[in-house]
Length: 153
Image (spheres, helix red, strand yellow):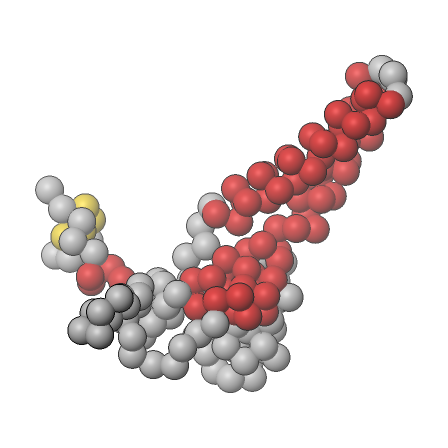
C-alpha cells in the first residue's frame, strides 16, 4: 500500500476503533459489545434499548434472519454428523432415530440462538452497521426514495 492510500472501512473512520473479535465475543456472552458489563437481552431474544452500564443504544440493530440461518447451519452440521455416526455404529429403527434426534435438535437450537444473535449484534456494533456508527444507514442507501419511504422507482 502506498503512503497516499488509506484503508476504507465500513462506517467511516470517525470515533474509537472497535475490535471485531472482542465485540462478537461479548455479544455471544450476552453482554454489551461496548463495555462488556451490561446485559444485552431483556427477554429471550429481545435486546435492551440501551445498555444499563454504559448507555450504548441497541434499539436500532438489525439482526433479522442471520441468527436463525447460522443456527440452522451449525446445529444441522453437528446433528447430521452425530446421526450418521450413530447410524453406522447401531442399526436401529428410523423411529428410534426420530425419538432421539428431534428433541436434541430442538434443544440445541434453543440453546444456541441467543448467543448467536448476540454475536451478530456485536458484529454489527463493531462494524458500525445499522445506526451503530452514529449515522442513519437508510439516508445513505441509494436504492430507497426518502420521500416515499420505499424503494426508488
